[in-house]
Image 1 (tube, rainbow, N blue to C red):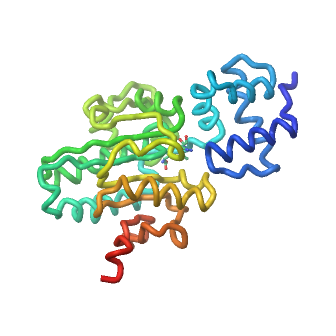
Image 2 (cartoon, rainbow, N blue to C red):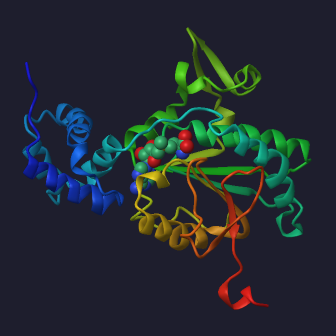
Length: 287
Ligand SMILES: C[S@@+](CC[C@H](N)C(=O)[O-])C[C@H]1O[C@@H](n2cnc3c(N)ncnc32)[C@H](O)[C@@H]1O
């Protein structure tokens, strides 16, 4: 039995929503991909056509509820613990010692934002690496991580904090022993004492205000690739720059770059990782 068909006209309407909500120009050759990814929303809402789904998406009463699910269905949620291990080495060995050397930070809680955190593997990895490093550095100020994603489903999974197979493919066994409860059958749940430090929130990077100010670290990895160049630049310069502490660090994905785009960030040159710091504001630049 064949499923519902996505017509060219309705695909064009979805392309507009994707561009407006996600900053992605979805080309014509992505029609089948879009149809496949939206099919689960049709099933979840018990709809029999893409036209019905488009009406739901543009209905002022239903759109606020459904738009995050739409964006979540279109984007890829692929993630795993310790993805981009070189960045965590840089965090442990260079970034945290440098941050904690600043006298202004003494006794203060370290604030981290994981933006586009998917099902939670990234913020929980940040917690494990940072907690261990901070302990070794004798830091007593504490650590708080705000983790955001546009997808309600991903945020719910992250709060649940239960993981198996692919998510755990790069994690060292000692982290599983120290920070997880073994549920048997290859399933592990993040311990409550870890969850207490990681606050999850549904949030659209393009439309919502940052979830705070003065973050010492912002991670936004493997998310910018979804956006076109102008949207990437707007996001980092207008949302991340004001949310970051003046001496904070921005981590992006290993296959991403801000070079040639951002006016607010400069490359930090740490472990050849895509880690950035704020450039001096224009008034100070020549001083
Ligand atoms: C490939 S995952 C990256 C997860 C993690 N940062 C990592 O590097 O492993 C991309 C995530 O970005 C989220 N995302 C896409 N567009 C977004 C937006 N406009 N606002 C917030 N999150 C978004 C998706 O829901 C998805 O969970």
